[in-house]
Length: 165
Image (cartoon, rainbow, N blue to C red; front, side, top):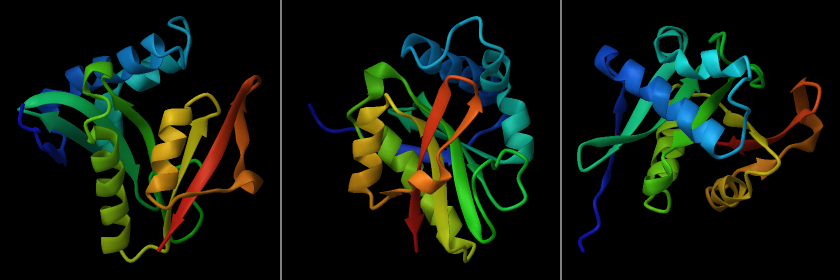
């Protein structure tokens, strides 16, 4: 079976509902958050991410299978980035599309945007149990930054990574 290439593009308004549902599905079904969490509403609101960050989507054979919010400096979605750094958040790839380069393509698109903007690096926060994602980040050159680890809520401990350019 021939390999299908991943296409990353900016989300369009017609994508927002699907991106919101996809993101909730990935986070809830992967056990990253509880379905009753207040964070579900934030994950579902792709239109807000598109307005306040850069919402990117990934397609395989024309099927929308992943999304990420790239947060340039000044974006209210940036929680971790310092001056001269970009950040990405809410990376989500449907289970059926994992292992096909979708996550990597989305992260690479964020790194490319940060580099093109002349930033000095790209940062991210991730849950401790997302070990497959951690391996991908490390293969892409990201390094752990334990000095920036944090907890947005009690019991939600996030680890951080940085890619310096």
